[in-house]
Length: 240
Ligand code: PXP
Image 1 (cartoon, rainbow, N blue to C red):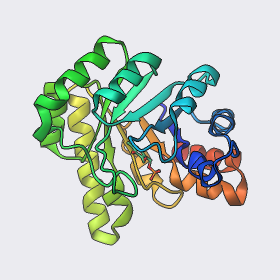
Image 2: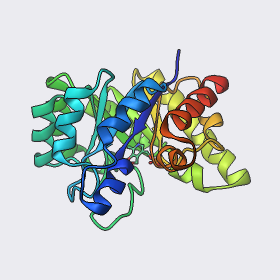
Image 3: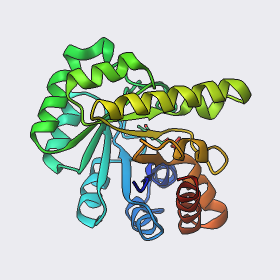
Image 4: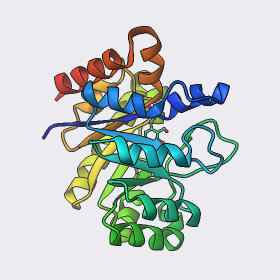
């Protein structure tokens, strides 16, 4: 199975919004990423619109020939936007206004009743629902109960640990991927992945997709986005 790369373009919008104009354009970044080997584009429409805006989502839906994965909080506002645009996939993420980035996985096990109607309505609309969770059997059990076809494992802890602790976290991710796949759920992974740490995650055979943003956009400052995406694609393919 080919491992897909979803490129998260949020931080192109972060730079654009620093000056309030239209440059750099996240749609242009998405088109460059797709040409350089991205299999899909990911964008997180946050409640506070700190990077991606509603207009960006509309423009991405029009411009892209690869699938769009909309990251969203489980709120009525975001559900209405997802149902209006019907992206290929919607990844439900936890969201706190004060956080700098998505700091942990969704507590699907603790919020079954809240999440169930969101997952059901996205499923009914033919949007592929993914739950961004920690690599934890209790969270996978919740995804099974919610009938989510996809889970994305939060690799932030893995990315920030070293040595034996990192190996232990990698094992948790590999075990979680095997458990999800055994139960018919497609495992994805993402957060904090870089050229230096992507290979062991990419080597986990059940993982079907990695979503990577901050590092690729940062690296693009030095090498260009096409080169940073192409190098990530190459490392992922080599690990498989
Ligand atoms: N996947 C999800 C669900 C995320 O929320 C994020 C961060 O927005 C990513 C992947 C990408 O993480 P990073 O920007 O650290 O590569």
